Amino acid sequence: MKQTNGPTIPLQKLLILHSDYVNDLQRRSPETRGTYERTLREFMRWVRNEPDMGYSVKDVERYKKYLLTKRKLSPVSVTMYLSSVRKFFDYLMKRGALTENASRKVKGGAPPTRHTRKSISVVEVQQLIQAIDRNDEIGFRDFSIVKLMVGCGVSEIELVRADVGDVKRKKEGMIVALQAKGMKSKEMIVSLPKDVSDALKGYLAYRTNAGETDPLFMSAGNRTRGQRMTSRGIRERINFYLTKAGIKNGEVRKITPLSLRNAAIKLMIAQGANMEEIKKRFRIVKDSTVKLYQTMN
View 1 (tube, rainbow, N blue to C red):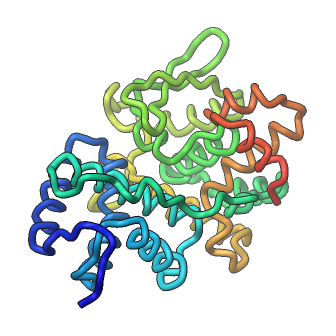
View 2 (view 1 turned 45 degrees about the vertical axis):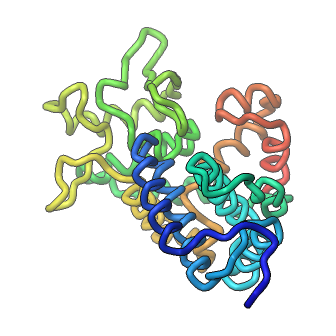
View 3 (view 1 turned 180 degrees about the vertical axis):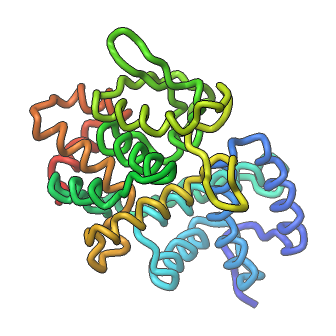
């Protein structure tokens, strides 16, 4: 029988604890809950093939190696997967199944030295915008989404959470209140440049009967008409135009909707914005993150 360096938890008991933990996650935001559930699912699959596993540092290191070599995940993804394991082990300690959290002694993947997603150039931004036909509500909607991403660095989740009533017209111009990732309220106020506000006005002209709490960006599909757009739906539309404009060019994994935010940050850097201005505008915490953008392709 394989020797272990830590305590063992019978598989049946672990499955019950895992189910209880997932139920406990219902108190978290849908985005956080979805991330923890998805990444922890991989660990539970791995454990099924490790019936004599001891919850020691060596065992967690073996799981990390599995993620890197067998699953071939990026160091950034491995860090996220190990983070979900740490949270789960904390829960196991709380339930008395473990006496210590060995996973906290295992470092995540190596931090990236550059961004894994490429930016797009100013010329490519124009190509992307020109690829959007503004002949109907969908075209004006998608045009507004791209403009908000490029002109203001608004993220997918911020667009998804926005309501019609979050858009306000002020003397100095149009603003929108956004709920950023990890925030519980719409406390972030973004002033819209004229070209962005003009794009949004064009779309809202189709939404004259919308109420204050109706989604700002609404699905226009036959079966989902009137429902709030999802992050996946926004990504699909952006990827459609990236492909249509010839920007993807086969680089499916590197040119993504996040590239629009990258382009916005790079444009601001090129215009001479300092470190603090960029961090404030794009909700960036670390100076090192801004430096990565400064060296991005």
